[in-house]
Amino acid sequence: MSLREITVLSDIALITCIVQRGLADTIIGAAREAGAQGATVHFARGMGVRERLGILGVAVEVEKEVVDIVVSKEQVERVFERMYLAGNLDTPGMGIMYITPLDKAATYIPPEVLKKFAADEDAKTPKKNKA
Amino acid sequence: MENKFGTDVKRITCFLPKGAGIRLVERLHVEKNIDSTNVHTGRGLRTVESVKDYGAWTEQDVLTVVVDAEQADEIFAFIFFQGELNKPGGGFIYQTSLVKSSHYRLPRMED
Image 1 (cartoon, one colour):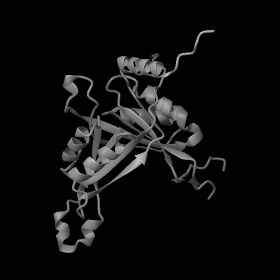
Image 2 (cartoon, rainbow over the protein chains, first blue to last red; image 1 turned 180 degrees about the vertical axis):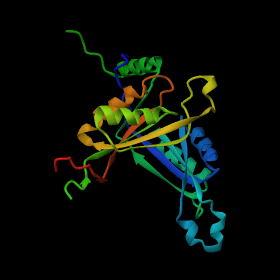
Image 3 (cartoon, rainbow over the protein chains, first blue to last red; image 1 turned 135 degrees about the vertical axis):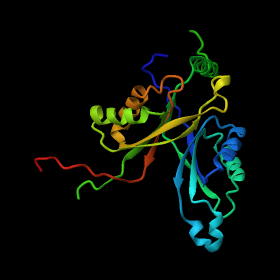
């Protein structure tokens, strides 16, 4: 592969999960068990259900962690479900998560991985009969 | 106001090693005339390429830029190569479509 080529990844989706501070690592652990490769986390501050829970709202942390995980469309449902369960997102105030479809993505792909994909593609392509 | 909203727009986001985000903001401004970009920081868990990568959190810059669809491929490639995302540990870049975007541009001096 030349250094000026981009190997574009398609059929991928971004899972974003916004949870209370301190819970991101548990959720990332679940995502990785389900097949996710990497993750990025940043801090944020949020409001919403906390204000509506009244006195019970003190149990909800204002500081949030935002987890971004990019996965293939084949994996997205499985990873999403595992993250949802790990974060207890069916409980009010625990957080929210959503999936964003991506147009394309790119990163460094080791040459040996590219070669393997090229070989797999060649194997799938039917050979033409010689005249 | 003219061109208040853009509808055919893309958002390019990339995860970069710490410090690379601000450098790219400068280059986008100087070389591509893009004045509106955002950088924030976070921590990242990279794809495992060797044993030492496993479980290794690193500080990251997250760069976000919103561009017209017709310019998106050019900016995507610019960030990819100038940000050295084509090298191991360089980061990750992706592009999404937006439904609508605010579209303010500074007026020209003669206007």
